Amino acid sequence: MLETVNPHSPAALKAFWTDPTHHHPLFPEVLLALCRLAGFDSGEVVFPGAVGDFDQDVYDSRDYAVVVRKAAVAPSVRVDAVSRGRG
Image: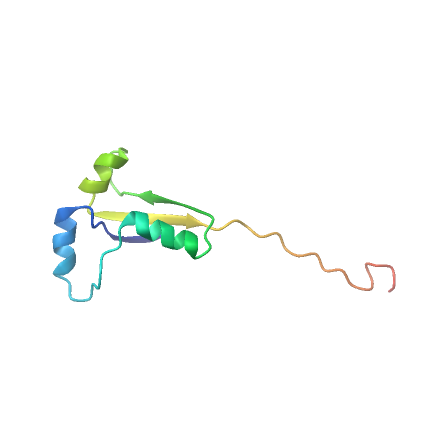
């Protein structure tokens, strides 16, 4: 999970530039795509305190979070001499 400033919100973007430690804003669509490129299998954009309408929330919410998931990998089965009947 990652939470950051929502650059779609003009008020949030204005506050973003007043902090000298900020380098550049990341739009939620771009951050979600970067997570997919990094190998995550699924993800979603969440707007804290939002009303549930993406078209409205994307502009009204000052922050957003990206929640990403990676599919569980089944453990590999070790085949050794004992399990093959040689032990």
